[in-house]
Image (cartoon, rainbow, N blue to C red; front, side, top):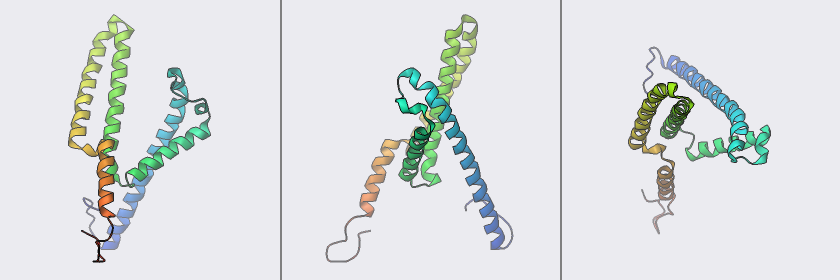
Length: 172
């Protein structure tokens, strides 16, 4: 593990790494459970208002299965590696925060003339998040799923090329 320097014999370092890994997994598990609970409450409440939800969304079990299936597909797509998911995660979080800032700015702008000055502050915050999102997409294009999909498919095809004719070894 790069960056974690623990003095002492190697078994002590391995123990700290194990505790660090367990703690990281626990934090991510609680974050995922919290996100699932939030989605289970938000999706049936808001999607039908916009005509975007099938009738079965009000039932919890099918919705849990659909969200779980989406999580599995995303995990398999990124090969369950934190490094591969980091760009997409950052892009998603920035897009979510940006949309929330825009929603607040719009709500305050429409509320009354008295709240329009406060709305300008949230438009400024939205601009900062928009700049950050664009910068993140440019600097870390791995968050761009379409490009990622094309590059990943091409790399897999190159890795699994048939054996070179007559030589018995794969091309490198």
